[in-house]
Length: 104
Image 1 (cartoon, helix red, strand yellow):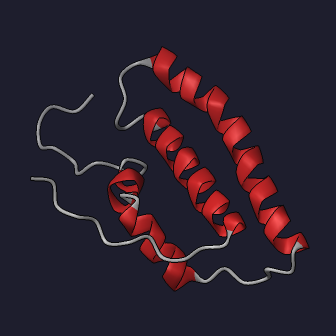
Image 2 (spheres, one colour):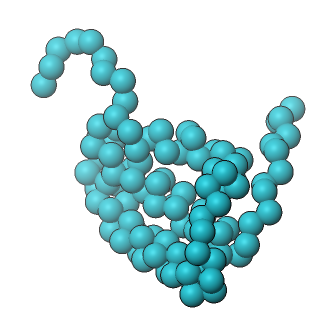
């Protein structure tokens, strides 16, 4: 049985778009991370896609700003990121623990 996830906090449409675009960019950065990937073609494709996702993230933040949403409510957005598996997804962007053994 799959455990029930906590409910997603109430977000404005713009905040939801920022969270979605941010996680899309994070997923792509995880696929590009040279410490975690071995396939140059997959990393290249992710890097190419990252440019458009960065534009989408910029546009989502611009919409928020233009609508007068001048603050990012980090506690609420952090809860939303956690519900959407943001901790696991962002962990792929960091360096993995060093493994003992022969060095390159």
